[in-house]
Amino acid sequence: MKNYFTSSLPAFHLWTDILLLNISFLITHEMVLTSLAPFSYHAYLNLFLVSNLIWILCINVFRLYSFTRVTYNSYSRFLKLILAITVHLFFLELFVYVSGEQSGFSENLVFISYKIFTFLALATHGAATLVLQYLRKSGYNLKRYVIIGNGDLSGLAKGFYDNRQELGYFFCGTFKIQNMRTQAESLENFIETERPDYIYCCLSEMNNEQIKDVIRLAERKKTHVRLVPDYHGFLNNKFAFEPRETYPIINVQTKAFTEIDEQFTKRAFDIAFSSVIMILGLPVFLLVMLLVKVSSKGTVFFMQDRTGRWGQTFKIIKFRTMYMDAHTYGLQHSLGKKDPRLTPVGNFLRRTRLDELPQFLNVLMGQMSIVGPRPLNQYDVDMLMKEASHDFQKVLTIRPGITSIGQVKVGYATSSSENLLRLKYDMLYLNTYSLVTDLYVIGLTIQVVLLGKGR
Image 1: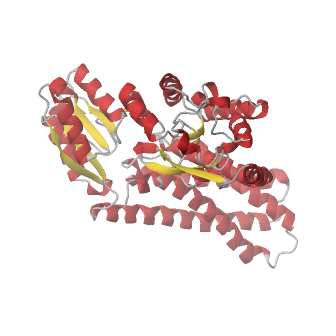
Image 2: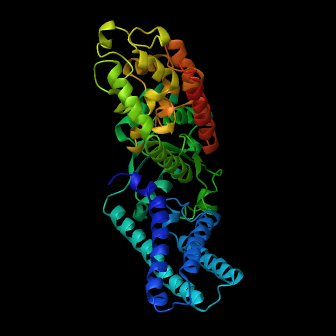
């Protein structure tokens, strides 16, 4: 079982709770309302819809699904769920009172629904917790970790996770500190071999430069950094490494979108936006397919290997903009409007970015995002690995996008310098991400499409 199972738990509980809430109302409808004609269907529908809206507000206020591996197993999560259900009941009853639907039937509906929903929600959360604990104790869904340093703090961290197997952490080994400058290559080989999810750094055994080197290494690897401080010898007397994190661990954000809320928001937005475009844009899709087909011989779609997240390759899907014999020209980078490989229709599709439309399929398949660094050909990857290895490997930690700030500002890169300039914009995006930023980039892209100013 892969590690992404845990990161999917918030989404699982979110949609499961919403489903259970609606099932509870439907069950109660069959139990209470079938023989109670005075309670109108219109009033029931209003109550049904308002119930969902209030629950969504409760989710955001109480942050029901913002939990870590440690807090997921705590009783406080269940108390928070009960509190959210209670507040939800209060406001729904308030809605019934204010709307004037106090027929008695509505009150029966609400209370019976809540008895069912409370039982189902708590049972589902409890069952999911027990199943996950069992799987982790059986060796599944584990997070791998290594420790840099070999002192008391190293043994503290290892002992904590060894005694709490339900948290699902697997110890891969220890890397002893001597001279980090001369050990940089050895450490990178160690990380490549063990492939940990977390690197624990014992601060009492490392200086600032060594810590910076580890963080820079983690930024381009599939791992996160946690700094374990030592309070000058008071560790054994004053502090304990507890499940509720009374002993502080400093989490270093070495990756974009590491927070569950960010991951969920970005992926949900990608799926919703792509689905709408695929449905509403169907006439445009069909028209472009026809134009490509009649303008030159060959296939409608162009598929090519591109480098995606973590350097893994995938097939990118685009409308074909070049002649089928384009490979015989011996060119690699696009030459813009004067590129002899472009068909007349292909030139228009490039300028308006319409050739990118099929990539919404890549987004739905999880290979790309709406906004993110452009996926590159292997020759561009080799060049950037040579010219700006660290920054480029950091960019590879997120899904590539259909559009990006660099794509809007630079367009199709025709040289190494333009690729490096686009990389700088990609780094800026990693450091300033928000949903508002994505919407801003999409707005700029729409402007390019409408004005035909792309290159």
